[in-house]
Image 1 (cartoon, rainbow, N blue to C red):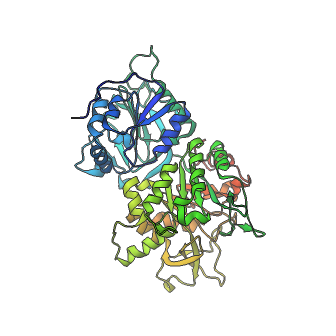
Image 2: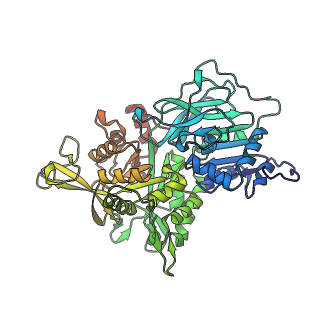
Amino acid sequence: MAEQPEKRPRADEKVVTMLDYGAGNVQSVYNAIVSLGYDVHFVEKPSDILQANKLVFPGVGAFGSCVAMLKEKGYFEPLREYLTADRPFFGICLGMQTLFEGSEESEGVEGLGILPGRVERFPSSLGLAVPHIAWSGVAPMLADAWPLQEPMPRCYFVHSYRVPMPAGGFAPWALACSEYGERYVCAVRRGACVATQFHPEKSGAVGLDLLRTWLAGRSAGAGPAGDEPPKVAPAPPPPARRIIACLDVRSNEAGDLVVTKGDQYDVKEAGKVRNHGKPVALAERYYEEGADEITFLNITAFREIVLADQPMLDVLRSSAEKVFVPLTVGGGIRAYVDKEGKSYTSLEVADAYFRAGADKVSIGSDAVEAAQEYFARGKTLDGKSSIECISHKYGRQAVVISIDPRRVYVADKSATTHACVEVGGPGGSPLGPNGERFAWYCCTLKGGRQDSDVDVVQLVEAVEAMGAGEILLNCIDRDGQGTGYELELVRQVKAACTLPVIASSGAGRPEHFAEALRPAGEGGGGADAALAAGIFHRREVPIEDVKAHLDTVAKIPVRR
């Protein structure tokens, strides 16, 4: 039986209790709630759940691991008791999925059972990139949509499992639906319990408005929430392609952290580091300008000892307090030994980034080395790689693999065992220096300074098996050139895996984004998102101009 409090304290409408079971970016949810003028208290013992006035449960990772941790900490039964008593609750992502009876992700593991049914994976038959990472439409399914807006703008989703639509398309608890290859339930409401599959804390102003509405509660004269279906069937808009701003962060000659940008990975000009501004200020600017995500790549001298890199961690903390879209951080996420001889695991490094406010971590050189070991073992996993360790704790969606490939030309495909693409076509990559018509993409390490024997097809095969959730696909040959993305490379990687792929390197004008995001069958790259840096830093192409072109000219859905 759950521990019972001796006496419930007087309710404080400005205090929110948050259930943190040890995985995921709870900091982002904390920052969002604090920005709305509320205090946040964390659950430290089971009785804190039953004493809560408003309880928020953000969850990421695997269903089974989450339930196991809740039970280990003694939270499972008090949480079920709290929910059964119909007290104010807001669940996010896995915090919604655990309300159901079980999940295909963890067969035999019971959920809280507050809602009927089970959670299932997106079917492979749909041919979709999984995890689903996008700003997707949300359509209320009940006549009374509280606490959602109506109509509801797109919100940020990142998940591999979903709640199927109820039989007949309606259930009194199914608050809203979304669409990704098929329609599914993306928000639920049962009495005072509300939960969303999407992340309101990462959905910008829309998500903050949702949290503000829920925190304020229903007005005294509103009566209970209605559960009647709307007169018009819901029709959520399609998922939007993401436009991502990237900030390469390093120290300049004065020792200050600045945002820089390379030309084929060379960040110096006239002997000095290019300086495009302060990281936090630039991140805030991109958030206000409509960036769907922001990526920090830590290329400072501290990247090999990241836990001692207080300035970079402070940049992340400060950004997370003001930027309410997803934040990815990369650089130095690997095991290392410090100057005092103390060892740190890659998971400890990732933990520090997540605690500082990161939603995803990006792994580069360590992924290439892990892939080499994977193939040396005969394509078997050992559970020790940084990818496996971080994915196991935080979920596949939290691990991005940043690939830095360069072209290696060959006269004929038979001249190499590596997977090749044909180059030299109209508008495509150029022929080799001696007229070579084929090339394979060599995965490099150490920021492009060291080649490997692994090609991009081999790398994505290995990292997908290890538990990676997304590919950030750079191209050294295109970096800083402004001639467009390497479409042959993007198409090759998309065909080799089922993960979402972010096209990077080479954007110079809005049309280049459309080329990367257009389906491969229509001559595009088929990317799920497109990233740029220099053209945004220098204000050569504003983010809004990119989205306007995609929306009105290319007819590619975007969030605006």
